[in-house]
Amino acid sequence: MPHNIEFTKMHGAGNDYIYVDTRRFPLDDPGRLARLWSDRHKGIGADGLVLIGPSEAADFSMRIFNADGSEARMCGNASRCVGKYVYDHGLTRRTSVGLETASGVKELGLHPGADGLIESVTVDMGRPRFDVPAQMTAPEGPRHLAKVGAGGRTWQGAFVSMGNPHFVIFTPDAEAIDLAADGSLLEHATAFPERCNIEFATIRPDGSIRMRVWERGSGITLACGTGACATAVAAARCGMGPRRSTIEMDGGSLGIEWREADGHVLMTGPATEVFTGTISLQE
Image (cartoon, rainbow, N blue to C red; front, side, top):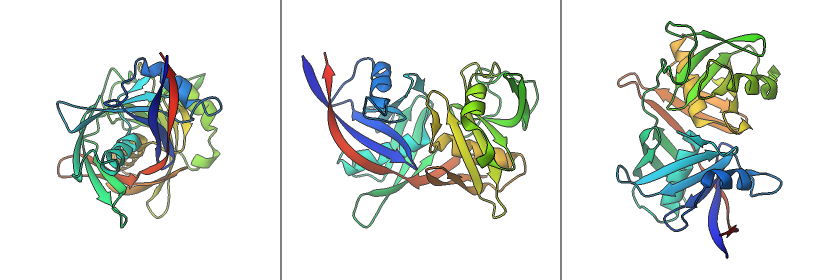
């Protein structure tokens, strides 16, 4: 018998997901549902599916499934939206929330607006990593700017892991990149055993960074929170920018600080609820 699942469509800087409170609506085979529901012509339409659940290690837990059904370890934009969801929907009255993810517990700082609803969220994304053999098998060395080959071509970029893998390529004009062609090639490069998120970034004269992203498992998206963090860290690490910067993506901007005191990356940005609805699930 079919039954209805309540969902909420939300986006962070244009990176949109379908959110389900699994304490009320448990889901079997979420990877399959992510593929079906993410379809922008035959489903709800999204970059993926996010499951909000209970946690023994934090206040709430989050699981993320990309549009192709693969499970992601972390998503910065989704974590901000989870913060907004649990506050605005009355699941907590706290403005400091712990969120369990596949890449560890993240601390969320919730910032209410004049209407009492959450307007923006700051996420402590933890420390970046630069040498994760399971995620990158490029030549040995510090990998400030590693070379990765794919499809008979070679790109130079910086590898940064924010729990999930990123390869950041600095270019004079990110707008001129064939993102679909180059991003898809690099995602599947042999240097990346788990596939990889790919960012193309341009440092602007005012110190801000224009970034476009090809997300592993989702393709071109309007924004990527972990990608913005990786880009800011790569710029600072390579001596191209400060430890605090604004990352402008197709869907909006995020403020990123790579804190010197403890090496943690703080990401601040908006979270927006688009609509709620129900979808029939065949048992």
